[in-house]
Amino acid sequence: MSEVSDVGELDSETLPAAPPAPAAPAPGTASPDGWLRLSPRALAVRPVTDLLRSAPVLIGLIYEGTRGGHNIYWGLGFGAFAILAGIWRWFGTKYQVTGDRVYVKRGLLSPRVLSAPRTGVRSVDLTAHVIYRLLGLAQVKIGTGRNDKREGENFKLDALSAADAEALRALLLAAPLAEVPGQAEAADTPVVLETEIVRLRKSWIRFAPLTLTGLVILGVLVGALTQTEHEAGVNLAALGPVRSGIRDVGRMPLSESIPVGALVVLLGLLLVSVLGYAALFWNFRLVRTGRGSLLVTRGLLSTRSTTIDEARLRGVEISEPLSLRVAKGARCIAITTGLRVGGGTERGGSVLLPPAPRAVADRVASEILGVPVELFRAGLIEHGPAARRRRVLRATVPILVLCVAVAGLLLALGVHLSYWSTIVLPLLAGLGWLLARDRYRGLGHRLVGDWIVLSTGSLVRRRSIFTVHGVIGWSLRQTWFQRRRGLVTLTATTAAGKQRYSAPDVPMAEALAFIAAATPDLAAPFLTSA
Image (cartoon, rainbow, N blue to C red; front, side):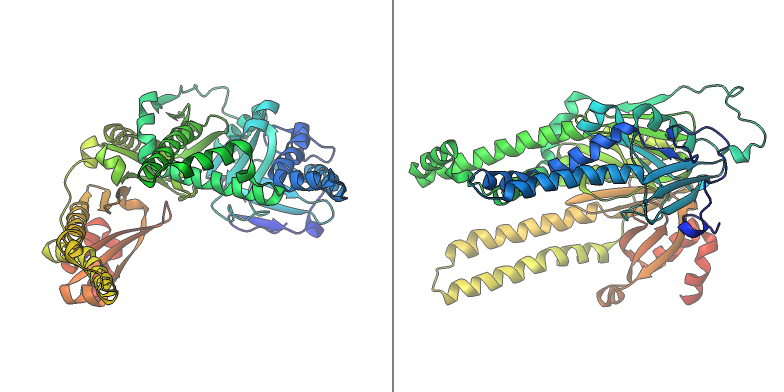
């Protein structure tokens, strides 16, 4: 049986009847060949979710079929196909956990087996939307850091019973039994109780409208509604209530319709933001499990449970969008290996704290990393006058160029520019200057013991704190304008989080000194080239 160091794929021709016998019982429904199956209740999940996902198409086909066409048979055939595909997928999905490896087998006619060492398991996430929760099921995603995003090449089990999913997570995140020959330590090992770090407070919902979550959700809803209208062949604007509402707004004077429309949009955005925040983060809870990991649970309709191994945690990021910063709020994100970042508010599975008061974010980050809370509030080393001038030029020059272009266009059209030149141009230039000053205030770096602190950004200010032991390399990048002023963009490379954390416009001498102080073993090539 050939294997790859972290994640391997085995051909069905060389695959034995069953993998080595497990050193400990794994949860699940066993099949005659020794593999473990998904919960039989999963047979009802995938067809239902496929039908719901294709509801607009089915509604359109059935609607056309009721008018005398034959499309209703296509709709029924599509539904039958979804049910058969779900049954086929259930029979073709199996898994197995041995003392040192985890296997996932997919396919019936041409089976494929993915395997990974248990020491390479970085996270085990459990998710359950409404249908899963009604049936007592959970989807299990085993993160290995390799091919986790590729469909068919990730370790995803859809779905196990909730009890089996919890037991499987506990088994995979425990020390592999192969490391303890001849015994399982469960009997003599004292149980360490969970330590709660933070849980959601209802007052934090006031931060919901200050993020882009509501706008994103509103856009998704509008897109889904438009797609449903198109696929189902239904004209929503022709419906009675909608048509009368549009007619009433059309009769209003323009001076009244614009404020009313803006108020409706604002109230809708506010409502969607609050509902979206509650749906994503309701019952949010962050605990330290006592097994060397952090457990994040959250969700209202769809629940999610994420485990973060503290041994792979390299630091945290305090994120402050401008609107949140004005309200003294922030969110906290883990810098760790094996967890995906990005994806808006959810940040994959790396969110440690939803939008909340900045003081709470500092306390949570301090408790997680075991460092003084002052580290997240202390001042940083400024980058100097040259960096400040670059901030001002980059914020004001594009605005001035745009203003000149618009002014030239207005002159060509014969428009008088007194209003433009006396009010709009100075206002835009002033906003650019304020933005530049704020960007410079958010720019800085610092080395405190074994911790690197980098801060950057204005519209979204981020302060990243991570350990020097997680840095695997540095890069120095200079543009032509930076070379003229002796500045450089200093980037720390790590296997965790976004993998690249940069401090722009650092004086060259300061950047070299920073590398030498933080990681002396990595500084030699830079000092030699300098």
